[in-house]
Length: 65
Image 1 (spheres, rainbow, N blue to C red):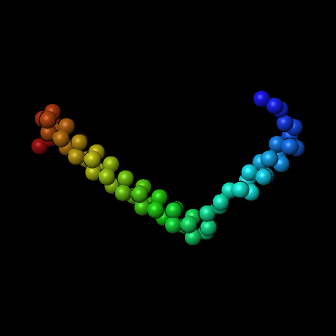
Image 2 (cartoon, rainbow, N blue to C red):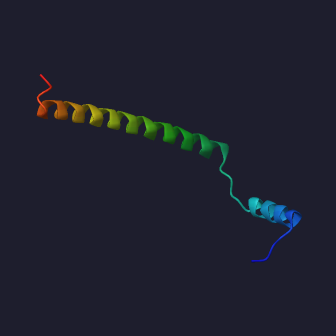
Image 3 (cartoon, helix red, strand yellow):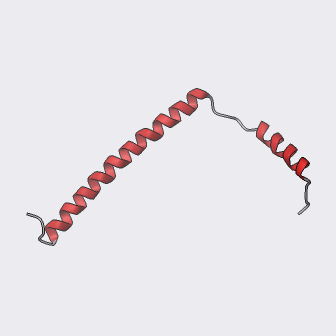
């Protein structure tokens, strides 16, 4: 593998960065909102699953009423 000097490396990085298609502000906001919605759904799902499993285990072990 050929070694490049630091200046050439930085030039290559800048060249590659210029090729990146950056998201618009609107796309970033929509994606962020969708992430928060999915996190909320996952939180509720795992909370309910945990409570259901807790109740089932307590019932099986005779600890529950």
